[in-house]
Image (cartoon, rainbow, N blue to C red; front, side, top):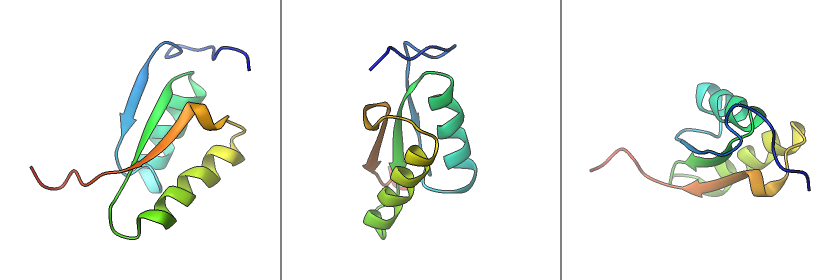
Length: 77
């Protein structure tokens, strides 16, 4: 696979709420700009959120190694 090209090609970006809405749009924009994206998904109904991330990644034609869905609860400290 060719190396990613773009403003963020040497960066890893963490985006929470990446399975839908603004979070998904943000994660997708960073991935298209060359970043490797850690796509945070909520712990409730985790599998469906992880699948949603996989769906938009596939629709955008991005390889699996560029977008990593992870389950995380960032609401509690």
